[in-house]
Image (cartoon, rainbow over all chains, first blue to last red; front, side):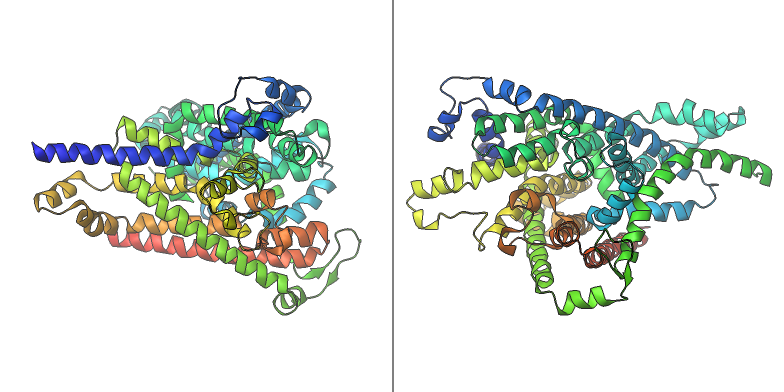
Length: 278
Length: 302
């Protein structure tokens, strides 16, 4: 009886501490959230408390005057295009790499390993010259191509892991029925890869959506800026409009938080698979 | 199943039709620029002039003999990586030990602690710069003043004594969820019977953790350690965003920010690429050691 009691008490203490830790941990996010709902003068006088009056003026202000609406659209276009192609290409590459009789398999594998180890900054200058020479500077297409090139190796490794888990018997049966490599891909691999596609998709959605580096370097016109770049520029220009800035941070982070909360199981799966492969 | 050469070639034609577009993009926008970086590190060039001057190893020699900023950047990279590695690993492990058993409540905690990992670095940067570290109204200085420690307040990101550690701390905050998830995955692989057995033997929970759990986590720990080490050496975004590109009086200059500035600001392309190549060597070496470790372990297992 008393053993159970102490166990219960221990349990209670442990989770109280955890709750406290989690609250401290989330405090920076909470701070931005509550302050995005305050007026600028109130932020100075009352940074830590709840707003006296909840107001969404900052969001409207950021969306229209701060051009976050436009940035939002650019981010959506770039993220959708990049992730779409990353998915198709990595699935195709992973399928080919999972075949035992692919000639040059080891070589391609080695090339892809380079892609998950090398720091982004290494190739930055040559890439910049390359993009300029190809006439792709300041084009959305160019940035999408860069995202594909920098993310395909990692995506392929996660996909290969999943594809290799598909039972061989299924394929052999299909081959006996006279299936070609193409129909094998569309009829067997594709339908069975749904969970891996989800994992790779959310992973890259978060990566591309959050990335400020490539759009910053390779896009110059205001009208093509993405959300992170817009936020960065905004921070430099209007140092005093904190309410608008906090609203901007929320506009940038909320979509990702929602995706994460909805698909966290696949997310965790992706992290684990990715780490083991990478 | 035996295959004729013709059938094999036919199949490979199909595979290569799959690979054509992805590998072309990968080659043109990834492999090729990286190879070029290596080549450029042996040249002197301002990025504009039509002629490049071949200087052999002079960029590398200059780096090690003439440029003191390189050593500062190297030192800062190590300090930063060290803080990140210890912080992210230790806190990730502790949280994982507390919440690794699958339950609804533990799931909620796991979700919370991984959350910063999905947030944009730009957002995290302004969140901490304004909310926490701001010298005028940030949480840190306000809290210190409130408890009478006014003497400790400072401009956290401008003070040479604190800037680097403060940025690294934010990186720990962003990254510890990643370590935690991997540790949880490792902990869940440990069979429950082992815990039961030690419980029957009358071991305390500390003893169990010390003698059973931690030794079995060694493999995962090695993996997490190396991955975070590589993250640390590659880190750029947070430093760039929080301290004006690492320039804050050179106190937060790391290898990545140094190579960026040398290349894009001072237009010393060859010099910049020499730094890049050194960074590359360090990262690839670390990653190779990790691969070797994991391979070794697999061999023992089978």
